[in-house]
Amino acid sequence: MYKILVKFIKKDRMKFLSHLELIRVIERAMRRAKVPLKFSQGFNPHPKISFAAPLAVGVSSQGEYLALEVEEKIELDEFQKNLNHQLPEGMKFVKCKYIDVKSKSLMSLVENATYIVKCSTVMNYNSDEINNSIEKLMSYDEILYEKRGKRNKIKTVDIKEHIKDFIVISIEDKEIIFKTTVSTGSQGNLKPDILIRKLAELENIQIDIESIRVHRLETFSSKGNGRLIPIEDVI
Figure 1 (cartoon, rainbow, N blue to C red):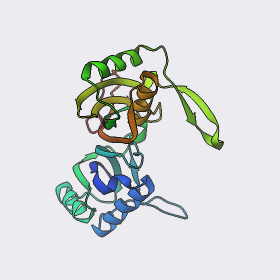
Figure 2 (tube, rainbow, N blue to C red; figure 1 turned 45 degrees about the vertical axis):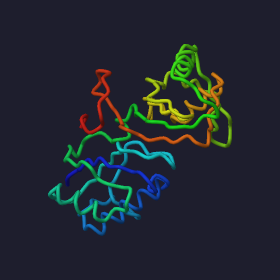
Figure 3 (cartoon, rainbow, N blue to C red; figure 1 turned 90 degrees about the vertical axis):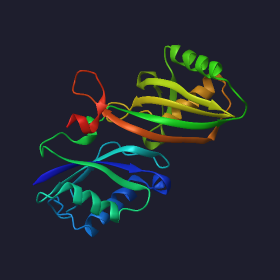
């Protein structure tokens, strides 16, 4: 048995797939490419494929990861080429490598992710205005967000500790592009659009909430020293 780590892209129409639909697309592509997948035991066996940090519907990414187990060693360049031939437009495997079969699950490794967020504003702002608003937002002792949980219960959470950095990339003609790194994974999770919504709410920035578009650049972990590095460099 062997284990392969795959980095892939999900964009264009594919960003509207749910995570369950994404799994089905990838499993179908692997069957067509005749990948010798390892299956789980039991009454309902399924391919042993796991993902790092599932995306919300509508979010594109160039830094997604999955791990799969195969019954026999295969040539990775050919594997990548065959899979990309079977995958729909908007999805592409960009890197593949063998990893230790006893390595930790990808989901347990994920700590942070970096995103580009693009949005439109009702009025024109300059960079000083937005930068000052971000600085004020980050100076708060806490940034509270009401989160709807199980059984529709509302829970108030402080999202400030989950914001690692938050900057403006560009401002032009009522369009702002932000870059932010936030907590992602089992230890904490903050969706970038929530951060933009809180900026608009607390600093009175007139952002068209419906215009928010999110793109994930990379998914990160660490080797215990606090220095974040891409998942592919951890294992």
